[in-house]
Length: 326
Ligand SMILES: *Cc1c(COP(=O)(O)O)cnc(C)c1O
Image (cartoon, rainbow, N blue to C red; front, side, top):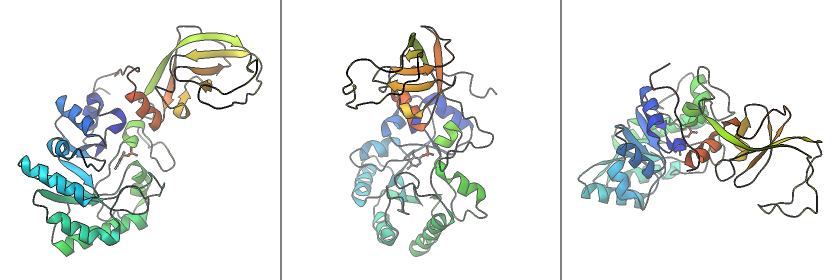
């Protein structure tokens, strides 16, 4: 599954994922799935975040949703009946990371109750690791998921088509596992978009790690001292800061701020150091001393910054090259 949430289901990017032969497009927000459908993307859509009040739209727009609560499944069944449909679900199992999931000991009863819902079809089970607890996918937890799937199939005489082992953090496990067992699906966002796995954020051979670039305009470039002068109080965000005297350097301000992006995830591509930021400004230390107002500087993004900047209405999204072009 190609996961589109970090780019808000942007149709151009999702088209590229489909060209790359993902079988499903998965997103955490039903609004993003609606956007993709409205843009004419015809894919099997999967809703990643377990729903509740949006059950009616989920049945309408998503083919499959991930679930962990019987009340939600009852609602989905109710709306599926009203829409004359069967809604497909993947039941998420808790394997230690402590985000979403039914505890393994409760799984049999949970599946039994789900199977009794007339308009719900259980198409698989899955798990999600390395999100809240940072638990690493390994042969133990992946083996447990495989075993659970075999046990459920035997107990209920059903066939589970999708055994979904996890997200981009599963890459290393997948590459090194001599046998992946029953796992036949991963839900991949960051690894496709930024070209890295997410256990230690190593680049994946053959993938581009700079597909996304953030450009910002220089709105001030001046030689200034590095120590503020006057009495120091709280800054705009309530912190009292301490400064290091680095002498007089070129300080560059770009028209980008915390409202647009997460500072920690930005890396200047011209080796400038980010020394501060406010809602609308980023201040950079420019040793090279070579910029003037109106120049453009660019940054590489991590996943959090990509997500934030794709969400910012102030940042224009531009696509270079056409899909299918090399
Ligand atoms: C976001 C998400 C993913 C994708 O995670 P990446 O680290 O971007 O690959 C997979 N599964 C679920 C349930 C998610 O919410």
